[in-house]
Image (tube, rainbow, N blue to C red; front, side, top):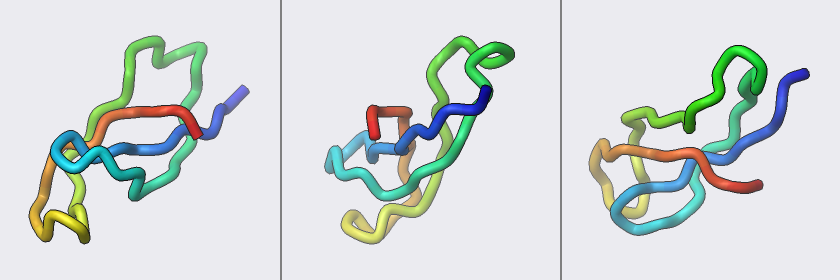
Length: 50
């Protein structure tokens, strides 16, 4: 039921994190504010393909 997704930085476009999400209950794309070690700031990370 849960699917593996990666979180991609909105500024530098690098894949920094992986997480899981339930596709049945959460149909929209996941977007979280996380720390990007390459940008060295907290940026928005959006869901991408693994």
